[in-house]
Image 1 (tube, rainbow, N blue to C red):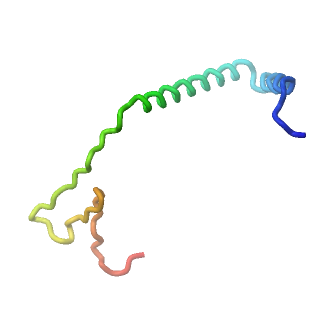
Image 2 (cartoon, helix red, strand yellow):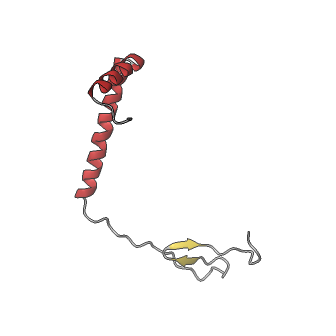
Image 3 (cartoon, rainbow, N blue to C red):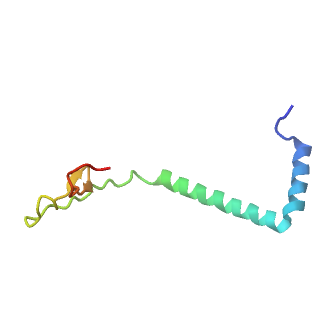
Length: 91
C-alpha cells in the first residue's frame, strides 16, 4: 500500500519543493551537497592511499631526584595519572 514514490510522485514532490523553497535556494542546496560529497570522496580516497599511520610511542617523563613520593606520577600505558593527596575515601 505505502511504498517508495514512483515517477509521477517524484515530479509532484519536485514541484512542491520548487514552490516552497524557490529556485535559487534549491540550486544552492544542490551545489553545497555536491561540494560536501566531493570533499568526502577526496578524504576517503586520501585515507585509502596513505600508508600505515606512524606509530609513535608516548614519551614518559622521568622523575627527578628532587621530587617526593606524593609528587611522582604513576604511569599506566603511557598515561600519566597523579596520585591523590588525600588517601581517605573518595566519592
